[in-house]
Amino acid sequence: MAVIDSFGKVYFGFGAISKLGQACAELGIKRPLLATDPDIAEFGYLERAKSSLPAGIEAIEFAELPEHPTVEGVEKTTAAFKAHNCDGFVAIGGGSIIDNCKAATILRGNPGPLRQYAGHPEKVTGPTAPIIAVPTTAGTGAEMTRGGGIHPSHGQREFGIGGSMCQPKIAVCDPELTFTLPPRLTAGTGLDAIGHCIEGYLSPTVNPPVDAIALDGVRRVLSYIERAVNDGYDREARWNMMMAAVQGGMSIHKGLGLAHSLSITFSDSDLHHGALVTLCLPPVIRFVADTVPAKLDRLAEALLVRNGNRVANAIADLSQRVGLPENVHALGYGGNDIEDMAKHTQTCWFNRTSPRQPTLDECRELVLASLG
Ligand SMILES: [Fe+2]
Image 1: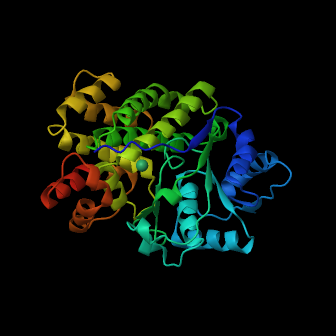
Image 2 (image 1 turned 180 degrees about the horizontal axis):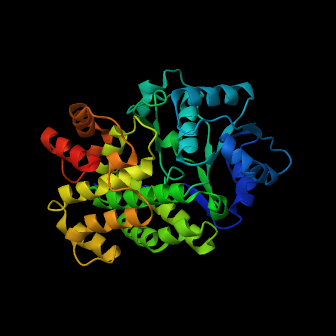
């Protein structure tokens, strides 16, 4: 039986940040914790967010989050939330900041350690708090999804947390907030979006409306990512990349696949998630191609290439056009325990919705093909 779920509300467009106050009011939030990192605070986005809040809503700033989401960062966020008697999270930043708040809403009213909730949303029985996501990157889709990845500590592989309580109730998507995103991050996060659209589309979960969204998202990234990388102030490109990110987030509702499993395997590093996903996609697409040939043909149409066999090459070409290296080794990954990587890839939760289940030998081959 198909389950076709709805998504959170999205205020989308230039100037959408001015709707933050309204979003808080809609959710009954009177003391939001504005969670972000020091860089984003410097760009002035916190001030712009605060200036949109009407009298009667008292925001608490918390701009101490690290670049990568860690258990320590989540615990600090939770402590700040409780210390200031906050009643909702406003996550201003990239996927790391939003994921951090997804985890913090669990710990807000449920005992630690956080890891006990990985794969067990049913254990979250205590109170949580609503999240408003204000993305400042375009690609992670975290503003639309229920799940997030948290590192036990810096340099250790992520584990996944999630559940309906973690899904942002409202996303405020203002493309202007991505103008200052540098080219390298524009490329990495933008390609994460195409990874979500492709892996969501290829997942066997039955959800034709989301399939259509995913194919549209693929076309949108293909059409606009190079423009956004080359000129961060290209309004049309930034609008479309932010929309593609939302579409990618919607596509994740069908589940993801092996490229994301591999990215988690390689997440014991500082390397960018979206770049990892993209470099793993070509070997994964070749691996599943014979299992889902009709879907590969539709993807080929979306990518403007002639047949399904060429989809993997098209993704590799696109990633190199926006400045990514050829493979995960060239990106800077230094791990060398292939057996451990193969085992981790095979058991990763994202595989549940892979169109083809790999053996351990096949995982080894996919790891080696991604590493290069
Ligand atoms: Fe991703």
